[in-house]
Amino acid sequence: MMPAILKDAVADRTRRHIVPLSGGKDSTALAIYMIENHGDLPLEFIFTDTGAELPETYAYIKRFEAIFGVEVKRLTALDLPELQVRSKDGRRSPFDVLLDEVYSGFLPNPQARWCTRMLKIRPFEYFVGDDECYSYIGIRADESREGFGGAALNHTSEFDAKRASKPVALSDKDNIRPVYPLKDAGLEIDDVRAILDDSGLGLPDYYSWRSRSGCYFCFYQQIGEWQALREEHPDLFAKAATYEEPKADGRRFSWTQRRTLEDLAKLKTRYAAPVGEPEDGCAICHL
Image (cartoon, rainbow, N blue to C red; front, side, top):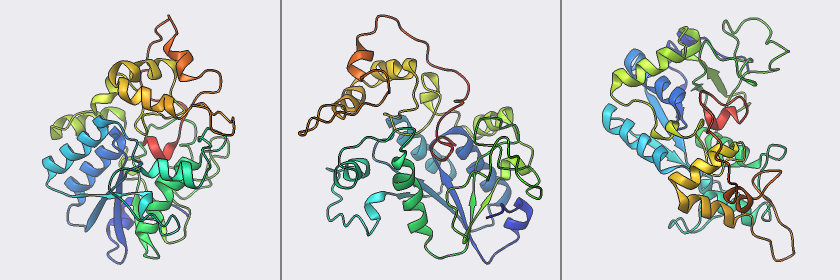
């Protein structure tokens, strides 16, 4: 679906206005921008919880709620009727349910990224249902990363075929129309930082050692990020390693293509965690 221009979206009171947060800087700055500039809209803030987010992410979402006095509705794949999950007592995360009961222990990877579709997109689509809505997405005016080029600034010309064939969106369903307020307003990375700082929220704490939001075991992480995870959250690193243990039938999957996490833990060289913004990765998870 062709993206909507911000001024047209905010003038439309016939649709729902949904602002998804990932726990990253851009989506959070967007949420603040919408509150401060279009707070008269019936904004719905959502966070799709994979059950494998960093502790810093959960804390960041709670701080956002406290500062702005709004509720961020938690969505989860456990709500999907096709999974028929009876118990939500915390013993089974959405990721674990899908991994064990749908994908037979096959870990997601860049070539088979079932996690994005089932943990992020499907719960969002189920939440929206058949309602007509605008989905506000935190792509900035200065985005140049791979996969972000489809969010054309004026939304009227054909998308740049060299960079992306279609705009970044949480769904391609016809009733869910993407909007890019930061891009429409000409806001860039320095503006995002200023919005977060001026609000008192600041950047998420994990940016001191990690370049992206998303699951703690994200397979797009570089070696330095895995090593930093082991230092910052040794329990989560150890838990991520358990997913690589051989299955009963002898199959074994790993998060990285070249090494297991056990191999990474033995490396004597400490690689620097990447700074700035990830050039690879999932636009849906990392916005």
